[in-house]
Amino acid sequence: MKPEILEKLDRFRQEAFARDVPPADVERWLATARPCATLSPHVDGPVVGRFGGPLTLPVGAPGPEHLDELHLIASLDLAALPTDATRLPLPHEGRLLLCAHPDALDTHGTAIHLPADTPVEERHVERDHSASDVFAELDAQLLRTGELRLRHDISLPDHDSLVDPAEHPHAGALREAWRQVRGADLHLTKWSQIQLDGYATDEYGELDPVQAAARAAAADHPAHVDVARPEDWVLLAQWHPDIDGWESAVVHWSVARQDVA
Image (tube, rainbow, N blue to C red; front, top):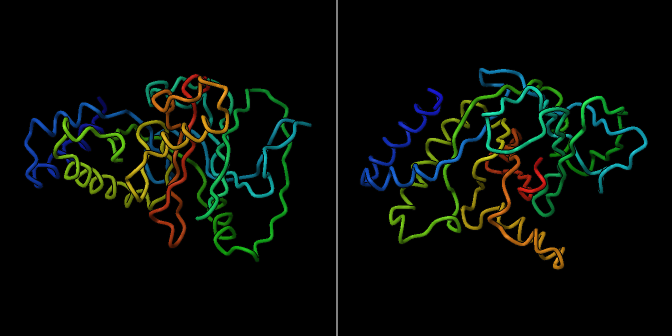
């Protein structure tokens, strides 16, 4: 296990012990940990992508739905992503585009894989920034943040729906300890980061966003039993916006495990 991950887990243990959680319960909770990758301009590590930039799509191909509303949040170079950084069986080449329209009432988006050597063209999107100061700030922020560097990381459960109270009677204290550790790391990255794989997080901590996405997909496609099991879905990525007033907001991209590769 990477030294930076061991150090983070030690910080979590100290936070949990300060809340009088027995050591055996702490270790049982740590057994649920999942590896993940944190991508940010503010960490030391290899460059694996960048925030923002122009949206390029295959020449002549139709754009995703609601193209005029989408912002290119990040473009990742899959060939530069270490294979041990996540458990996701991602393609080993090409680029992964994470696009989103973050909105308090209607957040939506998509993830697009561009295979290597795909002829692409820039898609110009006309926006009416007068309708939203937030989106004007978002575009400006994405243009100035630049390269995304990788840090090997770890994540722990952060939602009631993922926890069996009988198995983890101190779940509330353990989750609060983890939030303290995670919050300290977010402060170091200035709330400007992408997480690949691991557990999803949000400001509510009730229903896991990945499970919610699985159930929504099952409702949209009732004839396809292969999308109906929440346990077969994973977090592809989540983004913490570096926007004034949005520090607690998180945008998620979830995917059926069978579709990752």
